[in-house]
Image 1: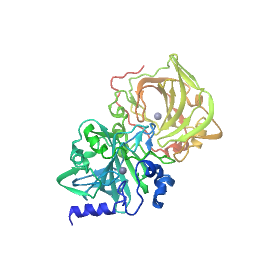
Image 2: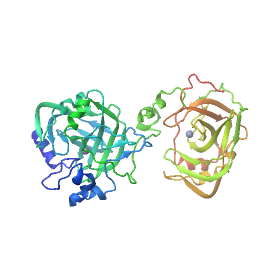
Image 3: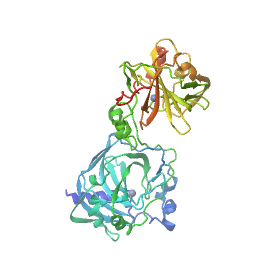
Image 4: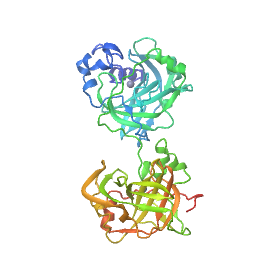
Length: 470
Ligand SMILES: [Zn+2]
Ligand SMILES: [Zn+2]
C-alpha cells in the first residue's frame, strides 16, 4: 500500500483541529455570524463548543512554570509533502510511521497545520503563528503538540512548506520531490505546559491531550506573511481553564526528575546545576560553630496550619514571628522537614532536618536548619506529627491546635552560618543559612509519621567551593 494512499485515507477519516467535512455540517468561520462565539448555534453537533468545560485554547498563567515532560519521545521521520488549503487553515498530511510517546501511550502523527495568531497564550502574550502537530492513538485518542512561532531567523525546516501553501481552497495535493521533516519543527528545549482540552475547531470534541511547548521557534517575517496572507486570523479565543490542572515543571528526588536533572527541568532552574553557592553542604570537621551576637529570635505561638505540598509537609506561620540578623528583620513564613537531613556534619546525617524559612519584606531569605535525632518524644512538634496530611492538598487549619516555633529550637543557639541557596528548584542563591549544631529529638514513631509520607526528600550535599563560614 503506497504512502500516498494512506495519507488520503488518514485525511478522509481524520477528526482534526481543522478539516471538518463541510458537506455534512454547517459552515463555520472565525468572524461574524459564523465565528467562534456562534459555533454552538450553527449545528447540533457543535454544542460542546459552548457547553464543554474542557475547551481549548487557554491562557497559561504566569504562576505556572513549563517543564520537561517525563516519558515524552518524538520519533518523527521525514514525510512527502501532501498539502491542502481546507478553507480554515493550511494543513500538511503526514506519511505514516512517525510516532509520539506520551503518558505511556503511542500516537501516530497524522497532520500538522497553523493558526494565526497563536491560539494559546502565555500570561496574555500571543505569538504570530502556532503550529499544531496532530497525533492519534490506535484507540483514536488525540494528542496535539503545539509549537509557537515568533518572528526571527529563517525557518529552514518549514521553508519548503511555506513555499507551497495553496492559495485557494481545494483538495490535498501531493507536491512532487518535496519532503518535510517534523522533527526539525520542534524547538531544542522541550519545556511544555500540559493539560486536557479539546479540538479548537467545531465540533470542539473534548478528551484531547495537549502539550504546548513553551520555547518558540522562529520564522522570517516573509514566511509568517506567506501564511497570514491566506489566513490572517484563524484562531479561536482562549477559553476558561475551569478546574483543570495545567501540568508544568516537576521535580522529585529520584529518576528522570531527580536532583541531578533539576537544572534542565524548567526555564529558570539553571542555578540548580550551574550555581556556585548551592545548599545543602557538608559542614567540615574544621568549621567551629559559634553563637552569633547579632542574631535575635522572636517567635510566638500560632494556630496550626499545615500542608502536604507534594515535596514535604509544611507548617505555614502567620505574621508576627521573626528573627533579626544584624538589624535586618526576617519574618518566619513556614517550616518544613527533610528526610534524611540535607546538611551533614562532617559526613554525618540525621533522620530529619527542620527548616525554618524567613523572609524580609523584599524577599531576602534566611533559613534556620535544625537537625532532628531519634530519642525522646518531641512535645512541641507533637501536633504537627499528629496532623500530617496523608495526601497532597491545600493548607488546612487544625482547629484547636497551636504550634510554638520557639520551642522547636535547641537550648544552645550554636551554629554554622554560610551563604547558600534554596535546596529545591529554582535553587535561588543569596540565602543566609544558619545550621544549628545541637540536634533536637523526636521519637521513632514521630519520625516515622513523616518518613511514611516522604522516605527521601533530601537534596544531596553540594560543593562548598570558595565559601567560608561566618
Ligand atoms: Zn489547530
Ligand atoms: Zn527545606
